[in-house]
Length: 309
Length: 297
Image (cartoon, rainbow over all chains, first blue to last red; front, side):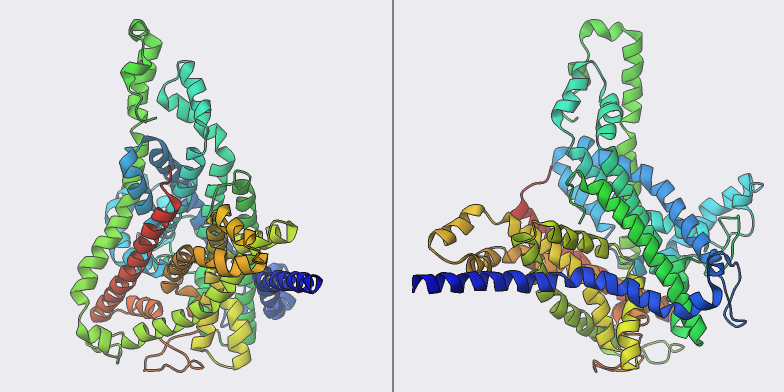
């Protein structure tokens, strides 16, 4: 009897373990299935254009000409712009939240900063179209064009809508990611490290730049890369403010288009099989790049055991 | 660094040291940068909230929540089908993602200490970072192509995939926070481990898991990109799961892009509804988590 019951328990234990494992394996399966499905669905375009697809500058669905370079360019420039702006601001915000803010405000402030991440992309897009872009055109683009218009970056008519606006919206959207991870990384720096430098006569700012930031650099870098990952794949807000023109222009004021935005804009109206397949290939490319960036970010952050959410 | 004032740092005799005086003066300016940055970061948030409240609530009326959109060129009409559609699609996604996510979380927390657990955990983190538009393309191939049409079901599948890693990771985290003594008490009574997990540990963590589900809902309620070519949109009343369905975020998107002011105002009103829902979910989750997790530093 006792032996029988013992055996019974072990099988149930095994059952729970195997059953939950099977379900949990669904997560990597979805990831693998996604890569496979996009690979399969882009077969037509891959066969037709090969590697030329990546370097083609022409995107003319009517003529059956599909080159992804304008979108790769748009994604690269808008994301780079976003990271350039959001990284310093986000890290400084992380420093403030972890080190300098009055202790009783810290939780509320951190929560408020994180709320930036809760606002849906489409709402940022709406705000971007009707509030941010007109403001930017009047107070930033016009003065820039007047004073620095001789630089190609700021040349051309300022519509408000364009690459600069897209990059800035992205910066706003990835700021909470960078700030939250920086805050956690900085808060995890041991007090003994700070005290050691204080004891040597360092000022508070010197403690931050010489101990806290170097100590947390891999985690902070991870947060920035994670922000980059978000920027690469962000769709709605960018689609609504970037102007959607498959164009490679040196000017930041010029309308542009990203990999994500061209899919959002054109997929539902893609009429030919090759058109759908070309958009699938752009999706595959986007997925591949963001997988790589995310894996890198997790590896950087993981070592510290910081919760990335 | 708070609590260390200048006077504590500077011995009186050293105050005459020119180098130290310069460094402290520099400190005074540089230490303002982080506060300035934080203020800058908060400006867009408050601007978004301000305009959503001002424009959104002024356009929010009874018609908006009870009427169909009607012809886009005509004023009047509402977003009733989008609101109901969002409830249906999000509800279906929750019904799929919560059980699956909780079970996956149980595996990760109870048995996931080996390399398989690490791999699954890693996959969940990476899946959480996959662009939602790519998930939309995946579900298009998986469901829309196979069914032969856009549908509420396809939209819900896309949202469920987005929600899944959120629920799995929170469940794991919450299960790990259940004190070992609770588990040991069960085991000491001779209850088999699997039963302790299912009947004692899981119920003990239910508030936390519920919170995770709430955060998951907040995350998917505003998702637009994965719905564009899965649920598509519908100008008419439809609650059929195998038909294209209107959703609030997609309606906000299409209304925002029209040249008609009355439609744009509807987009703002929709944004107000969406933001209110998401803020409430986030604040509720925060209150619950704050109580359970204790104060973060």
